[in-house]
Length: 381
Image (cartoon, rainbow, N blue to C red):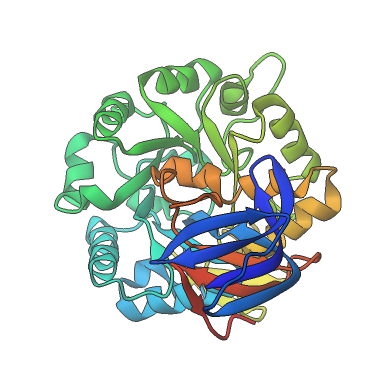
């Protein structure tokens, strides 16, 4: 297929052109002109052509949750977020019982094996249960576990190959040994839900922490006398994810993080829960009741409980509130998360021989067309 008359978004520029998709891959890129072509043609009508979005932290959508541990739930989540430009994602677990987390991971494993979702599941993000009770957020404190190698194996053994990220608190006793173990297994260790002092966070980074879960949220803040986990994240080379729904953090906080860490190190996520793509009302997250009102999801005590954000809206929010070039914003949802997942040799940028996971959208970031592995997915609007 030829996709013509589009503005192609590269990591450092946007250039008019056309591309040919062949055998599920980006076969050829043409800049500033359209070649003759005998096959199927899609006229992009001056839309933007972007790599598909990659969400590395999402619990659920459309009334379903990763912790449901069913193929049907993952299918519904997949279909819901595809409409918002997500061509790859990491289903994310919660702090629940060992058995429930293991069942959820097993379910993701089986769905990945059968390739039964419309977009790509790249693995699992394990958020908890190795986190700090003082920064519990919307996680369930009844199921916190000591961050030990044995506890991790009880949860993930037989399925370690699909665990991409583990969020934990490095200051808890036993965490440093687990960090080193996970790092050797090439599993990304992410600091999050943490009460760590600056020195404790830096010790974790030294031992293998390479990522930060929802920067600024559920972690010790920066103070000039006690830089905290936020200070360690900003003062190191690790990547960090942010929730840009206009509720979790101020837009200026993202601007500051980008200026300190650069656009190569920041990733936009949704941290969406089951109410994403649904109406306001009562929902559940990790067995706890969540009330969604005015685009904010909160527990009964008022604590934020994930979000109902979609990644196309996150792009729109950044575009409308910060003076950042569109191509830099797109990096935050494409090549950057692909690097974290270890898929950046095949996904995340528009480049010849890369997977044809592509989206077309207009100036207002309304998704018009979605391609997954070179196949045009219908009914995305």
